[in-house]
Length: 232
View (cartoon, rainbow, N blue to C red):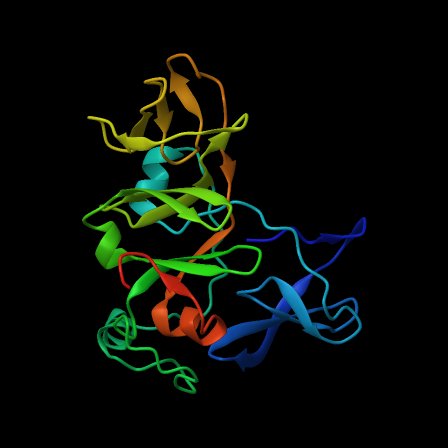
């Protein structure tokens, strides 16, 4: 998810019908520049090289979202919907999108879901197969100290900077689902918002790191040198 404001001006976007390595390409109606959905960056046109501001969001189930936000409203654009069988058959197959893979990386199954993180000059993928067994990950990537939290039931995966006021915190799963505890102070934190809810650090907030939940083949196509957590 990205903000639509660029240099103080509001932009509107549409679907171009084009793909770059199987990933949707948007266009803006003001300049007709093309934008990569995955990168959040203009890849052609007047605004090429311009980046949209990342807005924190996550992929989850409608059931989980309603539980967290019972008064939420939802956008229903109507129109034709594919059958459940057609979607199920696509996800069950090993087909790599419309145009196939451009980077054949067999470290993971083609359609394994990963949480992808882009850092300054490094990309790292956290596979769902690893997260299902390790829902809380304290990771160090270059100069970046990351916390990855994962809910096995809904598939929500979020990434935070685990440095707070210059101190690196180490987290572990609390007894309650979606609650974590830092080992340094014993404070408890909401695993979705990154906010400390009890203990000496109550009220503090971890910074969110841009991440995306995506098929492995799509991530590997854009990031051929990506690291994969849990795999050498």
